[in-house]
Length: 155
Image (cartoon, rainbow, N blue to C red):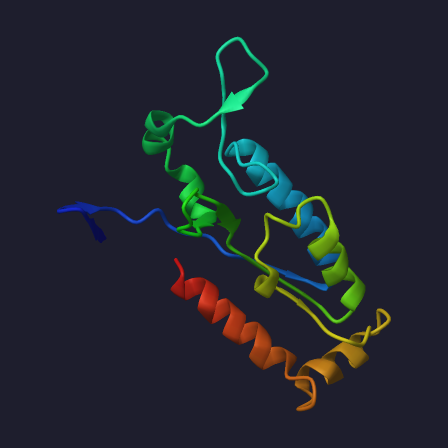
């Protein structure tokens, strides 16, 4: 239970996704695209509502106040104009996956620090990936756990 402006409100039951590897990151990106469509969140993280009888979209504070289900998946950046960021962590040893996400059409949606990429690809070899994750030189496990902890703290 959370206390908000003098009244007690139930928690939304936040959800965090963890996407690992190139396939996981690609599928995760597509899943978040569907979540955005479902909750009327644009690729820049802004929330809009369709006008009645029009293709144009506008914000409606009354509608936004009534529908808080999107807060289970998105966190607010608390900026002057609200922007919503997916509660997700993406991890891949191949740096090209991170670069694609940071330069693609959804580059403004995801927080750059929640997309972890490293300098060496494992070339689809399980043993090499496991070795990289446990090797002290790469610190992949520690980075991922720190990022997950930070994401949980923001819930």
